Length: 330
Image (cartoon, rainbow, N blue to C red; front, side, top):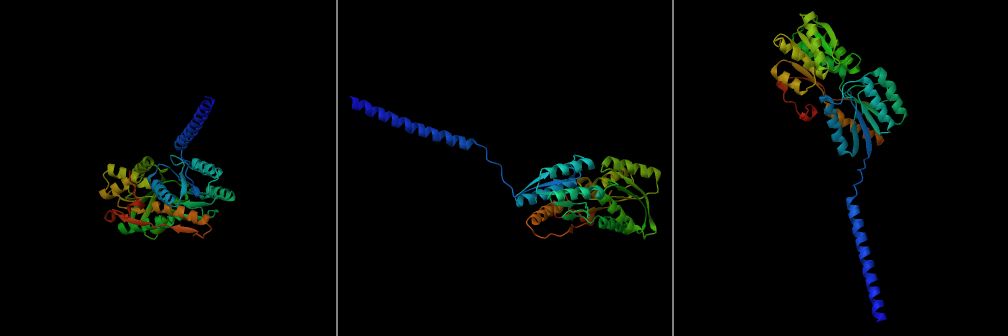
């Protein structure tokens, strides 16, 4: 009887231990499956800081940069002011540098302010690439974007050719303090200065705003009714100009050459309100900037400046190919 009880106890103990082990492994297995997947590791962490976040032009830069980042295992943040704000852009750049990112990409809007800023970031060991607008005297490692003087120059040549060397021109520019806008204006003025029949009557600032570009156009036409041609040096200027010209039914008597190909610009170009526009390649700027930064971090030599293609297009040139370089898909 004692032997039977002893054997039963041993059996029950064995079963108990076996079940305990089984259920322990089962619980651990369930816990392991329920644990969150650890965050994906990236080779590099970059930040792209534009002049203005919700801007179709900069969205194309962002798209190109994100496509390249995905291909090359880079974590890319796109941060900056919601609307054009130089102080906020600078603060965003400083915050990004403080977080010790591997590389920083930005538009150097004002050379006077951005040169010391970039130099300070460089001293922290963070490389900077400028996109669209350069600070050539800074310690940035490279620039990629439009040759802004050249883009203004070809706009001036196009206007002179299309109007046979005779026009009273008004220029509306995004911001007087922005280096790339200054270069576009200067390029345009240099291109038309040898045409005695072309006079630049007024130059006004839109503050990167359709509304203000329209307001300045209205004021110019009121004060200078002899103006029969406009050059808008930023993406939103041509749209604001075109809106007023259309409202005044001056499409057939006023020539407009604009900048970039936002959806509204394309629409006005198709309607014949805008005669021509200067196109850039924002997608390529973003895409190539990421590749350049990676190459630099890997110890490879990169070009000091890369100018992406810039050209003047007309209605006959539509649609633009490849679309990814020029058009935002909503």
